[in-house]
Structures are given as structure tokens and as C-alpha cells.
Image (cartoon, rainbow, N blue to C red; front, side, top):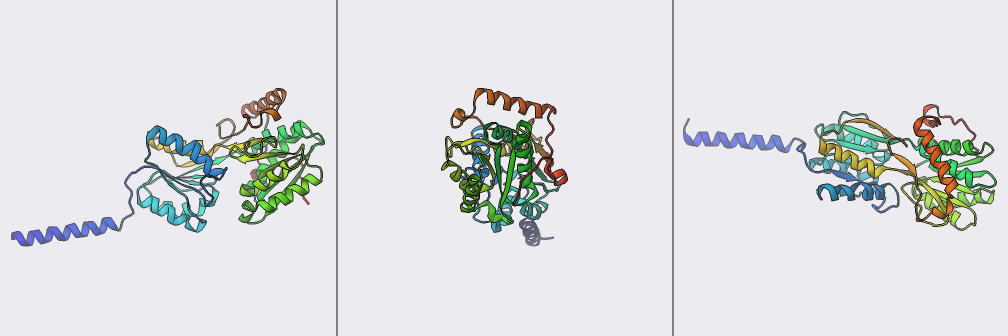
Amino acid sequence: MNYQAGRMMSLQKLLVSMLIVSATPVAMASGPAVAYTEAGKFDSSFNEAVYREGVVPFKSQYGNDLVEINPNSPTQFVQVLTDLANQGRSPIVAVGFSYAEAVQKVAPNYPDLQFTVIDTVVDLPNVQSIVFKEHEGSFVVGALAAMKAKNAKLGFIGGVDLPFIRRFGCGFAQGAHYVNKKTEVQLRMIASDFSGFSNAAKGEEIANALIGGGTEVIYAAAGGSGNGVHKAASKNANVYAIGVDSNQNFLHPGTMLTSMVKKVGVAAYGSWEESKRGTWRAGVKSLGLAENGVDWQLDIFNRGLVSLKEEKRINAIRDDIISGKIKVVDYLDSNQCPVPLLEN
């Protein structure tokens, strides 16, 4: 073979190699990433908790090679995850159960990358699913609510009528009945579709109706609609609200009795750090009180609302759940609640 022919063959081989590489999804390791939901990063809820308790400390510890993406709509979820995967980002943390379908579609195309989805389960060999025992944290704040309600009337407002949301309400009712078996818990749902998580006006309307009926403490698991619930409570003396997901005690000091937090930021940080250490594993991680995945919040904003006696009792209840002395029924196990929830 002469020199010119050999050179042409080498060029042809190089061109074929380049075409093969360009047609193959990128799988080389790169820095981690987070895909927020369509709500703003500073949403006083899931996104902000992931940012403040996950992104900020991770960047402080390991540097700034962590990409954050905030899509404008769920219709962009698949493209966002695909773009991050094509960059070789791993682990990619998808924030919230609304990412389930997108992760299900994208993750199989990038088997060498790690995906972590928060608040739902996606059963794939390269996906870590992190869920929380909301019923345990809700039991604790329900117990506190029953301690504060003089007439034993409480309310729970869910954003969307889903078994997952009823899990919060059922845990709340169990905690309330543990403290006072005569407690009456009214349950209301804002909508049957996802619009129920972004309708603050409807949340306020339902809360006002409950307050008009004598409800003294309202717990909302309703996303942005919860802002309307909190607003309604703040306009009524001796009526309290309970925040959810992130610490919302600061929103209406004097009104927010406490917040039932889900440590989504801690979970995201843990996933990224596990990858750094080589200990990241696919599968389901379920985080409750014992795993520091859920808890109640006591800080400068609600310290004046919770007496030392109440704090001591609540922490004793919390410890009893962790030890197994108190068994909290998970609504998702049977779609039934062991204590009454009143619906109209």
C-alpha cells in the first residue's frame, strides 16, 4: 500500500469513528446537576429547600461544578434532563414527583449516568428514588395542633386529591387523636388536578370556610395554594396554620404554629456526596424521623407559640415514633385512615 492510499484509509477510519461517537449519548462523568420544578428557585418550598440545604453546602464543600436548571413548564422536563445527560452530568437530581415520567423516559438512554428523583419512585437500574415518611412528620405536627386547639377543631387542606396527599392528612389526624381523642379533623381538597397546587385564592377561600366553622389550626399540604391558607389564618386572631415541606415559620410570625419539613435539600446533597464517595446506589430510600428525613420546626419565629411543656411532650412523641413505641399507620398501605377524617 502506498503512502497516499494509507493516508486516505486512516482518514476514513477517523471519520467513521467521529460519526459513531457523535451518534452515541455522552456517558463520560461530569459534575452533578439539579433540575428544579417549574416554580421559581426561591419558592419557599421544595426548590428553595434543595437550593439552600443541598446546592449551597455542596458547592461550599466541593466547588461550583454543579449545574442548576429551572424550567418554565413541565413540558420542558424531558428536554432539560436530556440536555444535562448529554453534558455527562451525574447524578442529576430531579426535584419532585412531577418528574417521574420524564425520568422514566430519559434515564434508560443514559445507563452509565446516575439519576435521582425526589418524592416519587422510578424503578430503573440507574435511578435512585428518595421518598419520605410524611405520615410520621404529620403525626407530630397533628399532636401539637391538638394541644393548641381549645375547641378540638382542626383542618387539613390538600392541594390535589391524591392518596399521597391524604397520607399527610391521615398522619395529622392520628397525631391529633393521640393527644385528644375528641379532636375533629375536617379534610378538604382544592382540586382533582395539579392546578390545586397553584391556586392560592381557592386555598384562602376554603380556609376561611373552615375558620368560619370554628377550626383553630389548619395544616396545608397544597404547594403554592398553601400561601392562601396561611393568609386566611393570619387574618384571624387565635387561628394557627402549619407549613409543609420547607420551614415556613417565617411567613406569618404569630400565625405559623410550626412546619412539617421534608429534608429534600439534605437528600439531594446526600445523593451527590454518595456519588463523590462511590457509594451511590440505585433503588428506593425512604426517609422518616429516624433517618432525619422529616421533622417539625421550632425557631425564633414560633418560639413564643410553643411552651416548654409542649415542646417536651412533642419531642417525647417524636422519640416514641422513632423507637417504634408509637406506630403511625401509612395511608398508602390500605387507602384507609384509622381515625375519622370529616369531609363534606
